[in-house]
Image (cartoon, rainbow, N blue to C red; front, top):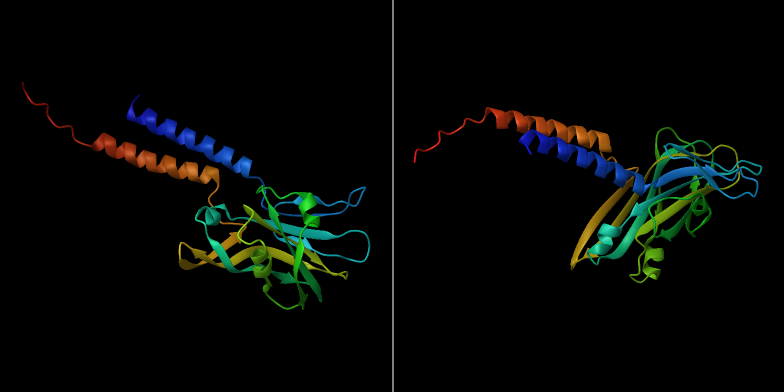
Length: 225
């Protein structure tokens, strides 16, 4: 196999691997409603911003998110404190409720919009710009006594009234004890990670540069025997 063929094969393999990983991961942020025959919740959109509203009537819009904490757990870390933060714009005065739940999969489901333990209620007031709402998750994690789930999920619900909050970004801010050291961590959803196609193009670009340099390398004369 030539150097060029090896580079192309590597790039093709990377594209295939990244696409498989992306499809296997599923959606970790989504929103939905209970506009179903039995009133159960369904996911309707996976692209923020998400409307969270509970107008007068049967229809309610909720949003959910999951954070992958497997890398943290792999180090045997313990949570000392944690906050779930929602960033968005507030349309009307109302209460925002946050519920937490543990998951074994990173894929958010419609049913999980109706799960969870209430961790806090924050009154919302309309104002210009982006509002940051914080919920303390420390008590919930302390109750788990080190038996943490691989994924930490949250869903947002509002008190009944007109309008809502437009959720744009979620954060999990925590202090952990990692191998005897106190460490601050910050997880964000949606995460700003390169898409598979972009990564593949980057690798192909680097491969092209490498191939060009390989061609320009002078060949040393062979020694005579």
